[in-house]
Image (cartoon, rainbow, N blue to C red; front, side, top):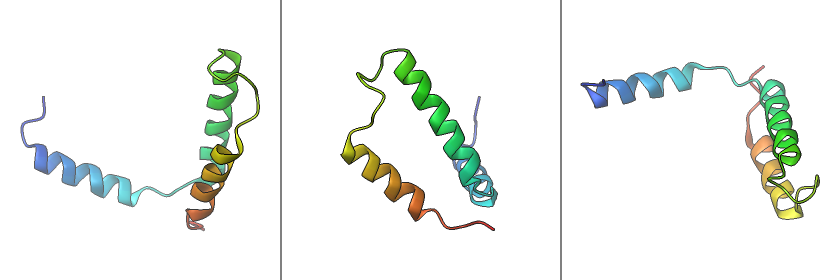
Length: 67
């Protein structure tokens, strides 16, 4: 059980800020999760709608290169 929520949130924020972003790894995870969702029937087709594709592109392009 978390007793000092503020201390925990500070720790969590510091930890997240110190992590190096691996865009390639994250994109592979995204692709795998998407393929699984299609396989399970969560999406009606294997193509994302254009609005979703644009939003995903925006997010990917907004990530600064960590190298």
